[in-house]
Image (tube, rainbow, N blue to C red; front, side, top):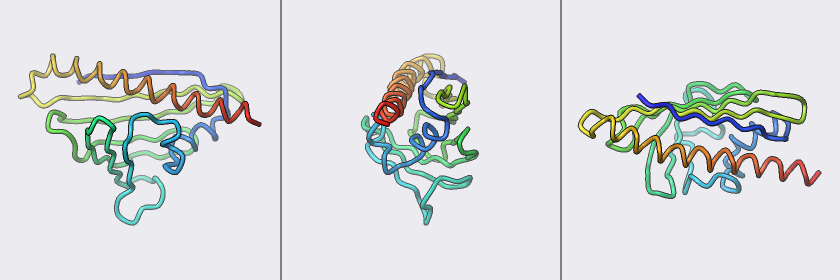
Length: 152
């Protein structure tokens, strides 16, 4: 199993950063990863047990289920269905207040490849891909939230 993790300091209040991360109406303004995010079933907001379809700009499709939702501090998902090469995938986004105007953001992904895909090599390649994705997403969230701060 491989872990990809990135932390950044965002100069914005923790509630604002969390809200921006989970509000799918504005998500496309800062998140370069998804082509489409769709809450499944009758869900209108994220909550434990809610399933979401995520289609990446790269074409990668994954259905995930929220296993932890603790506003404004944490959201965590596990893959229910995904690409054939992934055995498991889980992610957590953690938001920790440093002070009232500053948040420490940590994105952490856990990836396990299926055995028939040359796991060690595949995990290295997958880690490289997800490392780039995580960096772009965290930097996008940071720029978006700090831009809102500057506009006040």
